[in-house]
Length: 202
Image (cartoon, rainbow, N blue to C red; front, side):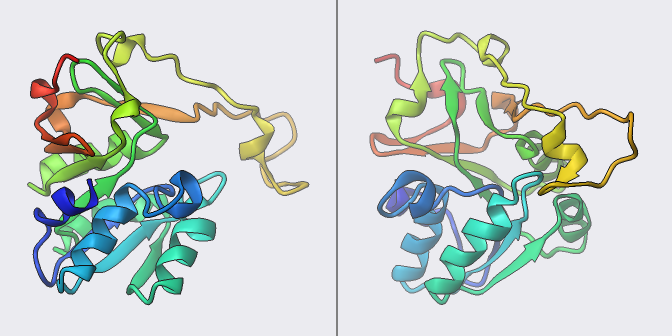
């Protein structure tokens, strides 16, 4: 999947990614980061903008660390900066992983992914998903059928053990969101690269 995705990235591009889809999350080469690594190994010069990915900061703690260790140019963004960067022409592609892909091509991933897809669509920036075929759930017809975990309020209202929100204020904290297939440019798996509406049925 890394090699397939790498073919879609052009020399000199800056790629935006969200959460961690590298070796620390998936083992080995990684999924979204595998696409970036494969492109660089093929001789392309890329840089990466990594969303910090609140509230657990996987992008800041894990993705930025992996890319820095590999010598891949990376800059960290807060999650709310992506639209600004796209509007300024600083992003040429978005590449993310996936926690589950429904039969119709809807993609569940870390909360914040859907917003990136919407922004990418508005700015005509391709939105790519890299995931192993085991992530594709043909028994789930669409994203509406994917259960979304809602995590504890305290994970948002507190930073470590320190409360950062006023006492009495609770937080809504879905851990994932669903990106509709219509916003996904292409899905890369070890079985091939597919348009979301053309996923194999077996």
